[in-house]
Structure formats: C-alpha cells, structure tokens
Image (cartoon, rainbow, N blue to C red; front, side, top):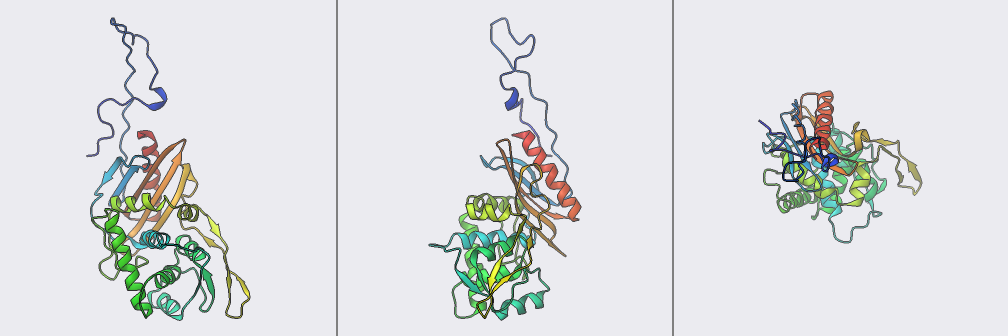
Length: 298
C-alpha cells in the first residue's frame, strides 16, 4: 500500500490561508489541513516517481524489482558518451558495415544510417534518442570504446556503462548491451533508471536532445557530398504534455512497454519510470497518472 500523504499536509498555495474560526483563544493561528491526494493505480508491473528537485520518493510500485529495460538502456549510452573528457560533439564518425550487419541480424530499430557516411557525435545522439536508432547507439559505443576490433570496442563501452551505473548507485542494474537488445543479462529497476535520468538531465546537451520532437541531420557521404536524412521523429508521444520534457521510450517482446520520463510545470519537477506496461496505451496512461499525481503531491 502506498501512502499518499503523511500526517497533515498544507498545500503550498494555501500555506498561509486561515479559515474562519482558526483564531484560537491563545491568539495562535492554524491552517486547515490539505485534502489527501490518492495514489494512482498503474498497470505497469514496476513504477517509480520522485521529486526531481529534492530526490524524495513520491510513488513506488516494485521499484527495486529487476526487469528488462529495452531501449531505455540508451539513456546510459548517452550518459557515458556525454561524460567523456574533452568531448567534441562535432567529431565525425564513419558508419561501419558492421553496424549495418548488426541492424539486419537483430531486426533492430534504426536511424537509417548509411555505411560510409560521416555523422557527428551530436547527430548520433539525436539518431539514438529520437527514433531509437540501434545503429546510432552501436556507432557511439564503437567510437568511445577501447580495443582493436568493433566487438572489443563495444564490449569495452558496455563495461563503461556498468562502471557508471555503480558510480550512480544503481545497485540493481546490469548492462550487457549498448541498446537494450539483451544478451541475457541486461536489466534495471524503475528506481535505478530514475537515478540515471536525474543525472543525465544535468547535461544541457542531453536535455536538449530528449525534448526535441523532430530532427533532420545532414551527413557527409563517401564522395564528400551532403546528404539530408529523412527526419528523425521522437518516439515519445508525451513530449510537451503537462510539461513533459522527455526522456526515453522502450519496447520489446519480453520487456513490453517502458518509459523513463521527466516533467516540469509551474516550478514543480517530477521524474520517474514505468517498466513492463502491457501496451503503449497503458504505458501512456500510467505516466500521465504519475505526473499528475506528482504535481499534486509537491
């Protein structure tokens, strides 16, 4: 059972309101108690909500149960990239054939990157976070991992993801992929993913990327010509709703539907995650309930 309020809570807007008869014989003033806010029921198997300004928990449902994370994994991929020392977002990365082969073999979501094209790190971040391109994720892992082969570099990058998870206190998280296509041991929890989101959103670049609804990249072809890519549209349909700022959707046969989210309205900031929703519609409904509830709680 989730307790919506503790004791008597005074709404911020009415903190100094005094009701008739509030003046006691002693001359002291008391404010009327705020009406309790009822915690919502969500269909997702796991959910978590925090006051992102303070880190205080607002809602919890199986928040520490390990579950598949699908493409919400890409939040960590972006976090590791953006944590690189002396990062130049305009550095160009050549798309390798191994990336194309991987997308085909996995039937993975793609930003439709073309082998041989030169794409900037900034563009790859958009390609990964908006249309959820696993090709963009792999290109970033290959670029920022260490080793003599693509396999070695991407494995090294995944190691960096796990090191970052430990540093953020994500005690129930392990990554075995750069994009959420699990190799048997890729999991996290609603609480851990919210910790990650809170850290990632401190980056102005990350924040700008995930709140973007559509982005058109201009890449450089093998011949040096400019290629205008088809627009990358954000998979997060909640963007802009009630102050929603992002962050990342995820879906898969086993993971079902997931979403890590952040929203700010009238100075109230909430952030959270839902994992294993049974449908995209239920995922959206769950998150809307949590955001609305969070604003009422703060």
